[in-house]
Length: 110
Length: 160
Picture (tube, rainbow over the protein chains, first blue to last red):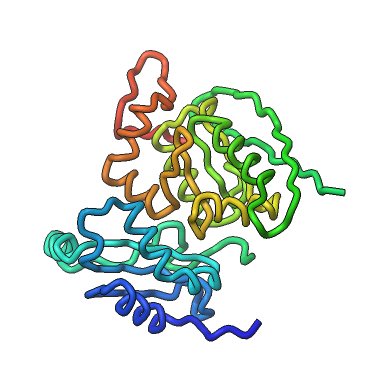
């Protein structure tokens, strides 16, 4: 399978471009294999949408990318929510690492 | 002819001591790839097989993926009644594994349904667990196990 490799940067630019994300953090959880990513996505487009709708928006924007990787995790915030969380956690806001072992995905590959 | 596959219905590891029956569930699938009517109907049935349904990798006892494990743990911590819960192992069935993604319009496993309504995947399950929405929803749907003598004391997880 020839696949243009998916990287933290390619996902980041896709989200910035397609979702108008104002801040994106993407972390490769597969140890550099480009198979599993977790992300924090901040976009004004999330305003007024519940969690499910936000994730669906992201899934649609990254349809091709997600279909090519093994695992995908996202935290979707509006700029206001992100500011608030950064203020309350002292800047300690980032991509979710639940379901991973120290930021690495475990389990079956395919 | 068509491959006939068995989707085993799994119950959550009982948090207390409830031993629920584990009826098995036979589904047949007609085509690969496309979500055929048969697949859709089979998934309809799976989704309706219990008030709380999780499509996961592996079984509740032996999850095969960290995200499935985290989701099962959340449902366990919430105290979901094992008799009101069913888990389907997508690794046992390639049709289900692909079909459920199309059915739910959701690209990843696990997937949680409550009262036939799609709730979300692992990220959503965990954030709803943390912000209290999941406890509220499960309470409203009356799918939590009520322990004898206590009325669903919150915040205190049973030590295993």
